Image (cartoon, rainbow, N blue to C red):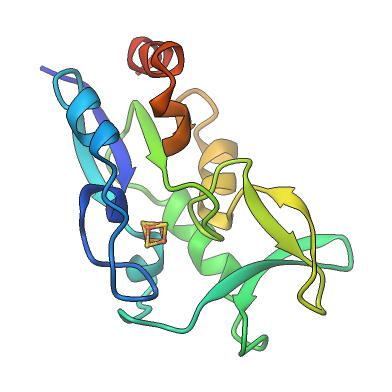
Length: 158
Ligand code: SF4
């Protein structure tokens, strides 16, 4: 029985992005599929956001990172996204995460100040909570999977 990993749903071709499109990643699908089974998750859809939807971003506010609407800053979805990660039902061996997303990005998501200027990088709210809550599972952003050594290490860890 192959181990089960989570995958950001847009990487598998599901049209769940804010713009109504997907970000199908053939490397993730074709190179990991012989070794692992996928459980697709879109945290933003899981918290009830529609497709398409207004974009959200990571903002640093008084030293804390929050995920909120680009044009609707009163819309703060940080806690809801973290809750999706903390309440994942099925134990997973790993998770391949969409790069640079305010929800799924792992160590490569732009962080903005309240004025909208980029001031750094961090993880998205879902990925950050996933790492905190399940520190032993293998996490990788999709771009790591394009490096053969990283892909092999991820499969071995999962
Ligand atoms: Fe893809 Fe994650 Fe954004 Fe959903 S929340 S569209 S899975 S990057």
